[in-house]
Length: 139
Image (spheres, rainbow, N blue to C red):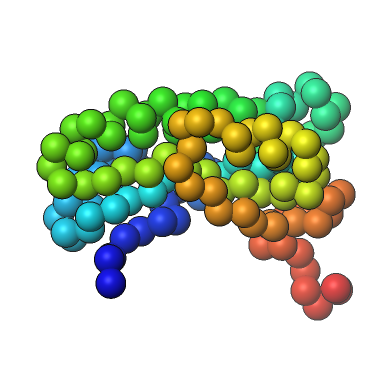
């Protein structure tokens, strides 16, 4: 069995903290041979807010996930060589939220050659709040 962490978020994601370098150092301390960074990239908010002409419904509903993805890919790609020299394989990934919002866009984004790893997730139904924000007594 090869121990690894394939679902990590830095401060680039609304629910993460820290930076790539800090996560890399912790992975080394733990003796992990593989670490994947999978920042949230929500396909229903991939473009800047003006593109959608809507307001965020809560503090986690950020827009311009294209910029989130680019920032993550640049940071992880830059850290790969140094991490490899220390015996740690870094994987550039993303947690692709709501791929059903635009299958064509999701396929195009997922085809980025810098990506090693994709987690597909569904955090909300289209035109509904994030599952975390629902009042389940009313559902």
